[in-house]
Length: 243
Image (tube, rainbow, N blue to C red):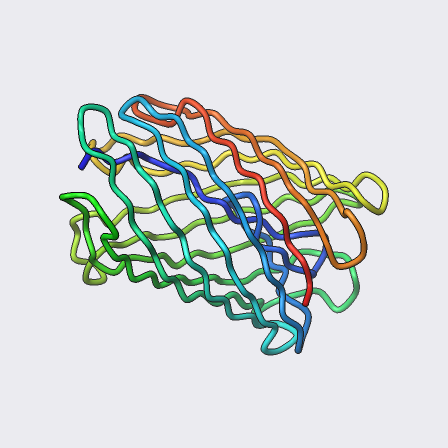
């Protein structure tokens, strides 16, 4: 099956309150201790070798003031060129924790995030059902209304360190708050190409997050690929609400 390189759909909100949408580059925020957050996202991608749509609901719970856990489902609909459409469902378990943060409200912080996903080939003649996931290091540095986040991580598919689709990735994201309701986003995310050895592709994206009302936020992110074989267009739109 023709594979479509697609960027992530994860974002975290202002300061230390987490909403897992829509950027691939994370900050160190986690869900409020003892509270649930729910989200629903829709992704659309146009790449040289086909199109892809993703519907992604998720539930996140704040286990401690510094640690959250999440369960999510990604329903992936792929339409490769010159091949039959394929459908996949991925059930993922994730965690994110801060292991270092400032004593006050402002200052740098660091954390780690991990993901383990079990795919199922819902339809289509081909498709891998190998488990997959990643582990990433996060560093966040606020500058007044702005914040810069850096991520470095390692993706795998199948057995850990089996080598087939294992690869490193990195990203940087600038977040800028405008008033109490808006946050503007700009991101560059680099990822070695899955099917071309020693070739790196990436996505440059920009968008915003909007506080619709207390406990409910909407977001939009639009990106374009960097490098041969990268997506030509990516659009992500979603909602996050606190339960």
